Image 1 (tube, rainbow, N blue to C red):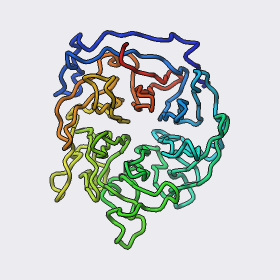
Image 2: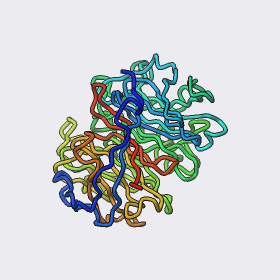
Image 3: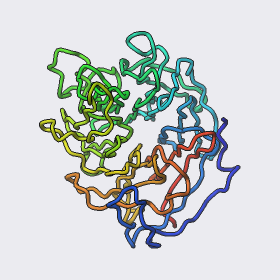
Image 4: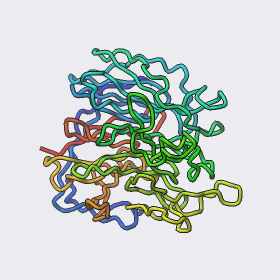
Length: 395
């Protein structure tokens, strides 16, 4: 499915302000209405005709790079024109929830033109079958083609070869310039608590070498697989965001039958997902098992029913008014975007749905703040009906 640029679509939609008092969905039970002084938002369709776009990144020159789970990169240039970015994706393994997933530009992109993806690979498994790999690429100045320069940068991330379920896989940079990788547990009950596998973990590596970052918490363990691990006991990490001002790293993961979670990342932390059950993958157990000594409680939980949170990002900038500093979560089981106000210590202050995005655009995979201060969203409805949206405070 070839994406269509905004020029072929309705350009800009001005929606009612948050002061309308629109209530949040019942799915996030404790949520309240948006604050009365919240800004009205403009929502612009930047691209249409996408199929499961997974992530979006903005280059220093304003170009947007979008990937789709089934394969392919699209660049939206500063003048609004779009073009496909040619890339060798011949080994892509797209099955179920796994495919071409996380995407992030290098902090030095203006100089090195380097970016990173996390994707299912047909021969990336330890047994020669499917696996998940993080790959480093460079893209030419004209955004016409991308070339692999570290293939893989990080390998050995397992995948569920039968279904592609719980494949992760989000990429973001921490404040020290290290690459963070959020992985899924592959729907295998023993994986989250097992430090000898990269599944169900938050990883941290050097983006140049792919080696575990200096200071990682498990470097002294004998098994080298554990050296890249920062946190474990996760189900399916699909969101990573750094809080402006504090530098704190937050992760989000889709829940079982009980809870979705947002967690404050702590080196060496066990986040308590242990669905072994009686030899099966038991999705009825708590996302944070209270029987695990030292298990770290989530800073936010959805409760029952879950809403299947995905990507996350912080809003930052005085132009956002009362929304400045919010953590935004893409919602997949329901629709729209959930906003959380977190204190500097991670405690929850308030939560509500963004009214302009509620029930209008369907499932949201990724909210991401751009370098231009705008919010970009990828929807996740499938069958060529997905969009890349640009959200800004109304002028």
